Length: 440
Image (cartoon, rainbow, N blue to C red; front, side, top):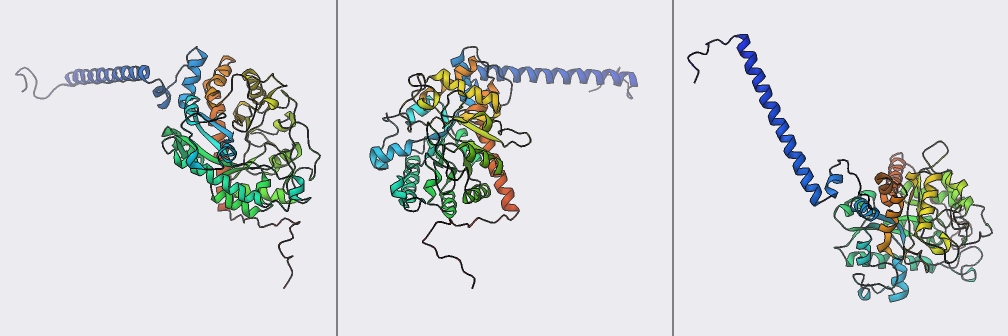
């Protein structure tokens, strides 16, 4: 009710006073709400530190390297480019998934408890089978056709183990699938074929592997094949094709069209250089280190690393560093610090956005001191943090750089398919089982 002294028609001066009063009252309410929000965020952050990162607010890492590593890995867990768990299943249990218990101690480097301890968010299950002997495959790689059968068996055992533990593993075939698995606190599980000798000299087999969920193919293993030259192992192999064969160029093109990652680990320097220059999509080294740190053929030389990047004449890529002792350092000298040296060298030459982790666990006999199994990744992150790596750089190393490359390859595939790029049906010219094309 109006006061008897209040005018029936308020003056302009009276209205101004009321308006200022309302403005001050609204400001007080806004500031009070902001104070409440800040207090709530602070309390939640104390209880759950990762919350701050999740909502995108700045977060300063703890000074203690171990705590800092845990904080980084809570929001950016490791995505390892290469783990050989399926071959352990093959030779240890004849691929009998029923008898394999990944939820307890396994004989080598990988099991679910240690994956969880190591803050692993995903890894490529290498569906690897070895190169055939030269006697078995013949001079033109024609005879060892059972390698395709064996690869199918490795795809089968990997999928069987992934589905056996649905609370821990999530099968993934895309970058978005990997991210979704990590959000659900599961370990993203992706398949990779370690060597084009597993293709049976056939681009058609590549397409079928893609349909079965394979998302990278290493162009070679330790042997040459119909598509490309290998680097060998510690000492370079004598070249056969001097890089990619004519069919190998077509293979890279079809991998680009499909969205299959081109993996250059194990390849010769000429193969790697030609593939980098020819590929339309970003590429990976799933498990390779730096030759400048330890001079063996399996590591990547600086002249090849210099072709990696975002500049003119360069190709986006990620080099995922291998932990195999003989590739890391001289006999008996491989340790966590030396692995960190490899990472830092690749970051220096190619750029910090082009390095990742590809341990080769379960496929190696000698591990570096301090990196004995998959539970030890946090120690490596702590070491790099001590060396001055930022939170963003570490998050790129643990998985962000790989995801960018994978998304880039998926983008190129979509563009090629949208442009109507045709599949490659080129046939290996040494095959004798198909008739020679004749004009009708």
